[in-house]
Amino acid sequence: MGSMDTSELIRSVPTDLFLGGEWVPSGNRATFPVHDPATGDVLAEVADAAPEDAMRALDAAVAAGRDWAATPPRERAELLRTVWSKISERADDFALLMTLEMGKALPESRSEVAYGTEFLRWFSEEAVRIAGRYTPAPAGNGRILVTKQPVGPCLAITPWNFPLAMGTRKIAPALAAGCTMLVKPASETPLTLLLLAQIFAEAGLPAGVLSVLPTSRAGDVTGPLLEDPRLRKLTFTGSTAVGRALAEKAGRSLLRTSLELGGNAPFVVFDDADLDAAVEGAVAAKLRNGGEACTAANRFHVANSVREEFVTKLTERMASYRLGPGTDPDTTLGPLINENQKKTVIELVEDAVAGGARVRLGGETPEGPGWFYPATVLDDVPRSARILREEVFGPVAAVTGFDTEDEAIAAANDTEYGLAAYIFTRDLDRALRVSDALESGIVGVNRGVVSDVAAPFGGIKSSGVGREGGTEGIEEYLETKYIALR
Ligand SMILES: NC(=O)c1ccc[n+]([C@@H]2O[C@H](COP(=O)([O-])OP(=O)(O)OC[C@H]3O[C@@H](n4cnc5c(N)ncnc54)[C@H](O)[C@@H]3O)[C@@H](O)[C@H]2O)c1
Ligand SMILES: O=CCCC(=O)O
Image (cartoon, rainbow, N blue to C red):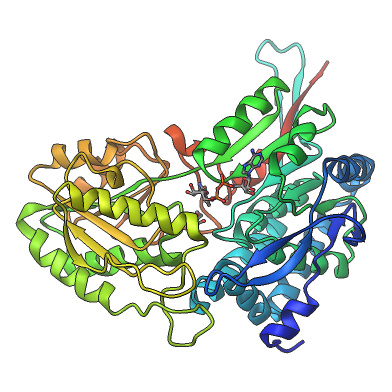
């Protein structure tokens, strides 16, 4: 199928609930609007799932669970592979849809399609490699058989910033492992996962294995699920505040829980770094996804001896980014997701500047509709500035200086978060020493993009629990069973 234009695409994307394998039309039920961040206009009205819908979806997931778990891994793998190939054929439609509902520039959306679909292919390959072990008991009185079984029905709650990838990174390993899944997409960007559900249905996914439940009442809809003993796992990606609240609820039911939460990534440039490479890495780490990535470099700690040169070059590179509607072919930086996010970015910049930070680029909000904010560089950011502690989730680079390696490590670790960190140095010993000392789940050494479907992605401290992707990702959906043999 060829690519569609905007109105054709929006008309063709499902806006109903995908409940247990069936499309449930909005009918008399309420709908909620999805906005275009470039204009603030309503793009589509989507059926608003109610708590009863979620319970029906769970009934269906439980009913389908046994058969899906017993489906040969090769068949589960082939289904994921078919969906991977169907999305790849419709890559342009997925990219345009994400740009429309999330705002990011089209090249960013295209990268996300490539990244997001790859989880389907990767986990189609992992589905057939779920292994256990068989060993003699040390006392010689028996044998130990260890097997892996699917966890059971799972609930996934996903954010708006990567509307496809944050869904496929959960759905693909869950289905590969033999679990059934209910997904609640972010209310800002439900359309992408509804289109994905349509493709799963076309590919022949059995009823009940996957449900997609857009809703404007996230807490009301997911609350009863978390209390239902038939649900066996919660996997959440989103803010630390919401993750914490959900973990408390999940804890009451002792649910298996994976949390991919907020970040506050440090980007450390040592005096021996290749500065041009560091600037390229910095631009990627900062402006990928318009700065709205949990891995986004938030704080740039730069050796004072090279700081001025680094900041001058960074400013030059970030100035070349063109702010505009994501659908405009000349745009390299799209709008932020919504008014609230724009307010947060403005507030954090104002706070830093009030404390003495120097604006080297941007810092002024353009007039007109849409939630635009320009690429911004702040230097001399004071230690007290909120932007050094809070995730800005926008195209703002906050730079501070350091003199010694210990000082750089201490500054980098001075945060409650621990998702990604970046270091630039030509000294291998230093790279390994500092990587060991950084309190983060991921370290990028001389590179500004760390995400890879084949690598375990996840954080420590307030950035979460568990890993997605890699060979580790499927383990999150598997229980270990020990069978004691005589
Ligand atoms: N670590 C990661 O892999 C990762 C990836 C992407 C985004 N994030 C983080 O996500 C945040 C941005 O995403 P966001 O604004 O969508 O986060 P958010 O926490 O506001 O929302 C995430 C999801 O949780 C839902 N939600 C909100 N309140 C809820 C409640 N009371 N009960 C149940 N569900 C609820 C939302 O509707 C959405 O689907 C950032 O902090 C970012 O760092 C982390
Ligand atoms: O926003 C966080 C996810 C980013 C990624 O997976 O690369």
